[in-house]
Amino acid sequence: MRVLILGADGYLGWPTAMHFAARGHEVVAVDNYLRRTLALQTRSEPLMANPDLEQRIEIFREVTGHKIAFRVGDCADYPFLQSVFRESRPEVVIHYAEQPSAPYSMRGYPEAALTLRNNLMTTLNVVWALHQETPDCHLIKLGTMGEYGTPQIEIEEGWIEIEHKGRKDRFLFPRQAGSLYHTTKIMDTDLLWFYVRMWKIRVTDLMQGPVYGLSTPEADRDDRLAPNFHYDDLFGTVVNRFLVQAAAGVPLTVYGRGGQTRGYLNLLDTLQCVELAATHPVRNRELRILNQFTECFTINELAGLVQQAGRALGLKVEIQHLENPRQEAEEHFYQPAHSGLMELGLQPHYMSAGVIQDMLERVLRYQNEIDQAKIYPRVCW
Image (cartoon, rainbow, N blue to C red; front, top):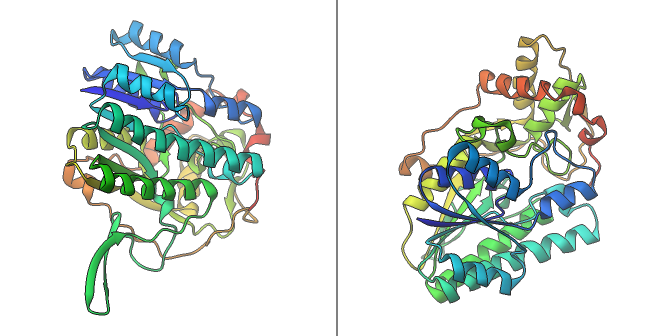
């Protein structure tokens, strides 16, 4: 297939580009280095230095023999994005090109405005470029499980059937985001559903949980091909933060009571899920929503897994509960459905003590690079 990957320099975008190229697909990678720029501006650089996209692509070609084409530019710039669609003629477009941080979106007005402008304009531009240039292209959009919030009912897979006063209809499952970033994802879903109905485009919206992992078959060929590993409070995930804290001898910072529950998945499973969506396209005028995670954990359970892995490596790992800097339920009901990707053939990689230990061993190689100032909350809302 001809595959266009937007946001290809990101934690998910780069492994995805390598994954599809290594399987013989014709890949075009696009990025404007927004995440790198924001990380630099906020002192949130990753633990391991990563070559830029052009350098990564050249290293990948030297190591594997596979080619990836690339364009550096802003997907929020419609003429640029339209030209990319016109030149590459994608059959599948994978849309990661958004500001990815909930805390960053809540940092202040400039960050809120950037998040809204970048995320919504990029999605609008993708839909218009697809409609104008490649109307049969299948759009795979990265959403987030955070769109749903933590309702007191079971979370269905994107849709819910409602009976009201003797009549029934099918609606998007109600959303209640906990940050402006997650709100833009809700607006993305609504925007996609509107254009699916108006223009008969075909879209898969992947409601993804937090991802962990550094290892993929392609990245393991050369350390310079590794995905980005942020551990700060803005762009780092809780798993990354706990791993770095364990390596640095800093107590694991659990926000509040630690009962916050989310659905997690291994980076390897993200690649599986995106490939399964691409190789099982939907029909025209269809918005398929898939909840993309493999298992649920509380923050306390994650801290316990990291503590166990650290002790197995001879580290003294303590757990510390901090006052929660976020407005969120610290103990709640959480039961989301996630059968769609399993039915397509997903073979999960579960979060075992061994997986956590392997990640921690890798982090320990960069122990001297850890900046402890980055692992405490800097944004409250």
